[in-house]
Length: 220
Image 1 (cartoon, one colour):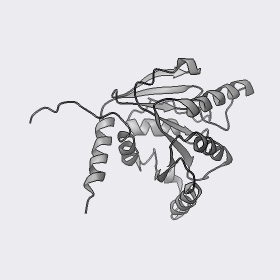
Image 2: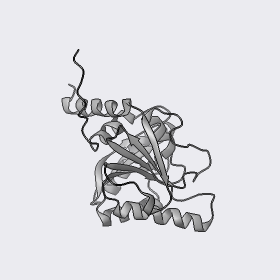
Image 3: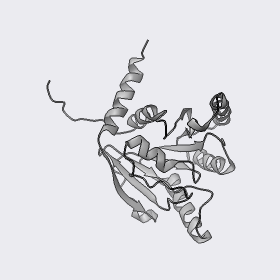
Image 4: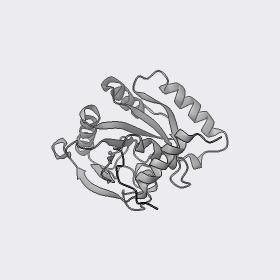
């Protein structure tokens, strides 16, 4: 039997992302952040975890976020506006990047300032490569979010690259790792940007955090 509550959430997600998501601006300093007048969610994760590919697949726009074979291409906080109801923020990847230590330190500082103190940040979607599981850099970010009480939810990426049975194993291991973390959202979402797996669930989750859609529907 279908769950009417889940169906409503899925419909809300499809409605939110049926309209074009627009690029707003790139931010290189905390002072450049837009006013927190809309709820925000952000995507965080290691370099090469697939953030840009996921955003493009999520929005159905191939070139909205810059995707590259070179890890660490995202060097700013990139803002996207979803129907004037919620903003999506693509954070610089942590870990490997072809850049100077000075630049990496600047991006890291900006990211941590954003995660610690951004008013209106409703949730951090922390992307984890399903082939590798949680790494030390991920645990560091989770520790900081636990300390600052910022809710985060794990998104497993690239699940299409796993062999049979491996998804169940990495899911079980990850859920066990977050089970006692105070700011971790219960449950995770396995996704594949290539196969479109899990995207409807992620859209539905984001829609629960967005402002309501008050448009008056036309009469049939």
